[in-house]
Length: 96
Image (cartoon, rainbow, N blue to C red; front, side, top):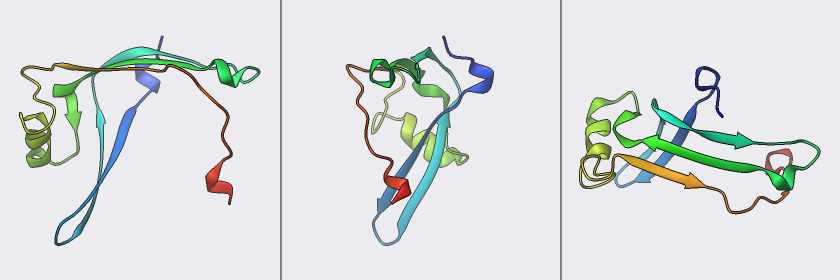
């Protein structure tokens, strides 16, 4: 299980119209598990459930838009569930 006090489920959004936009955010309410063994990284598993109404971008207007029927539609879809199907080793692109 996740240690919620020591964990964060965050995201970054990018967009452009007249200006380029970069917005960080996170979900305050989530549960699940992340299983990782450094000796067997290909066996990594992730299973997360996020409460859509708990989204927080530090901008209330953006939060309301994301909660609306235009995006997450929190009234009809109160959760988002992510479950990994596989894991594979990839080179660290940040080291290039």
